[in-house]
Length: 434
Image (cartoon, rainbow, N blue to C red; front, side, top):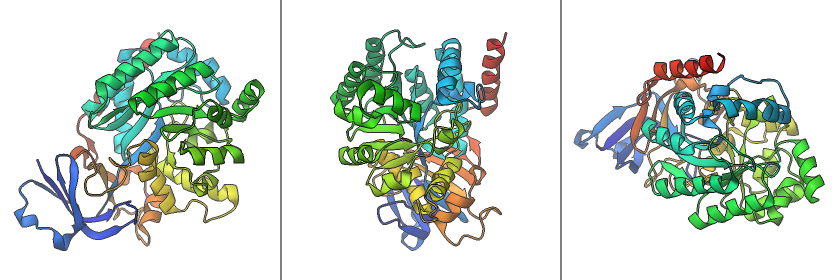
């Protein structure tokens, strides 16, 4: 069915950052067929569904460029610990007990409820049993980039690197070309994957023209360990073995030196910036203002709920705008418009999806959210970007659409039973504690 959204204030997030004060969006076959001011819209002759959003802001949905969706089952499990201790002594052992296809399915459903209610319409995941996550994403109607996380030791879903890569290839073959699911390749990190593993994964991603995702330079310890082993810091080491490229997104990148920033910019490698997780694990603050000025595409990610503890991109975007100001003692570092671009079109570009989503333009998928800008916490609105980045909270987001289909209307998630998802996750924890 064709759809018409009318009487909207529209933040397009296109190249010109056009704002349509009172506009409409016409949608056909999941894509934006027309967008413009209301005087060009003929509501009386429209044959499909009409939604009047008077008093609302319509903008692209958020693109979460780095997360681990099923880790909702480990939210708050091992807080207030440094990354190495948190990961090796707590998270990896817990995952060995908890990560099964059914538990992943349950945890994923609850994660999608949280993501949809906080405005995410596209996410980039790296975890295990990604075929299950892809299936649940398709049912929920949310757009996802799927990555089976390959690592140099046995996991719940595979026993060897070659088996893990085979799962990745199977995922690509099954889902490539799907309108919502974008399969790709992941290697965990240079400290958990050998040179051979890293290069095999890159070859697989190149063969199928997909994204490759990896954690890079998240902590000082990682930098010290990789430098001691290879004679180079992480990003420079990855460059030396052919892993920095335009189809690569590097998560975190807290500890890049000037040469690594230059190499990443020259290679076209993107960054998935996770400010809250980096703060909570005391990993540090990534210098995103410098990265952006160097020409690197920087998107925003929440990381998983075990290290963040939310999947709320509204919060994440605000931290992404505020931290560079404090880091540089410069209130102009990463302004509100830049932060919103990081959360939308930059995120899409980092995932290789800039022709699909991230902005509201003719020919792109209708991935959008409506925001109540008349809410008490948002008025008055002197500047749209400032209002969204500095004043908005996730409850101001009223409805969400992906590929032309509503997946949330008036704060009700349409394709997932929220209460059932909560009870199912509670049961996982009860069973694990017996």
